[in-house]
Image (tube, rainbow, N blue to C red; front, side, top):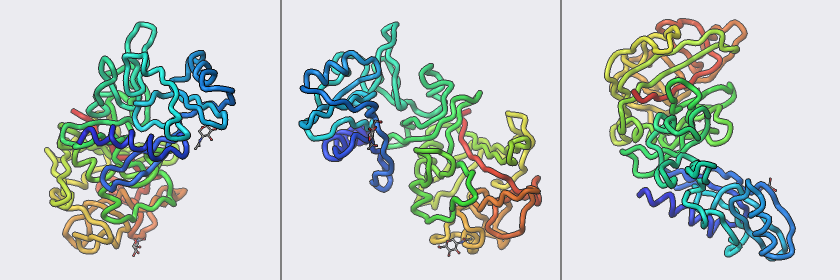
Length: 355
Ligand SMILES: *[C@@H]1O[C@H](CO)[C@@H](O)[C@H](O)[C@H]1NC(C)=O
Ligand SMILES: *[C@@H]1O[C@H](CO)[C@@H](O)[C@H](O)[C@H]1NC(C)=O
């Protein structure tokens, strides 16, 4: 199945040739979810040869396409790089520096003749994908950056695009980020399974997807970290859970933990416990509510308990962002009861760290 991705990309570059965009594939639903553009310059040239020359003499240019109306497109990735498209018409592919380079998948040689890879690729010739964000930190061309990388966890049949933060001491693989009060996390079972939101663009409000988190957490020993903070992040609280494992959809995405919550490695004050009270708790959404209507009551997808009070936190609820940082008392707001009581955060983040 790993070849799926490469297949997809070649599929896209042949069939979806309408506009030099790249399309990232949502593996779970077989939907095209986003397009990115590798064309950085469009010129008019008199011939294909002239177009190729423009690319040869431009250090940023890595491949080029020329269409019959004289349009010459310079692209900053090679043909084989992950889902990159730079052609206007079928057969318009003209020239790619990749053909002359030992680095594949969009990588290019640096001055020391080593490959600088892109998009999560690594290895001498950029031939493999990193296994997770922590693995990405070992490569200087990824370390120190935040952004989307493709990872290939051992348990996953396909590569997964994830938002990695490699500017931190320990790499973060985000499974949730929640910043906009207006962004709705009251979504369906299928949306929570496959992922939703703006991860591939602004990465402010998204859910990576339970199926992806399942594969990642079954490929290593991960700590799940929650973070909530106030508007200017002068108050930041965290909570860590070691050995977080998400089971598959047939298990209704129930989770397991290795231990009760631990003190945070970062030294931030803690939110208190929530997950241990619902351990082995299954996931619920309003359209597949495996709890006592808790997903409906709290307006979010979450691991709610079976008891009538629906558990002690609601990180996927609505952000109230009140000026006094106090809860308003509505059922659908974000809350975390144990240490935080009536406090109401301005943002929520959830990420995985390999330990
Ligand atoms: C891709 O980028 C080029 C250069 O910035 C631009 O001219 C072109 O319209 C873009 N294509 C799309 C589909 O956005
Ligand atoms: C969540 O969405 C469902 C379906 O649209 C709706 O019935 C429910 O009232 C919503 N809950 C909240 C708290 O918005």
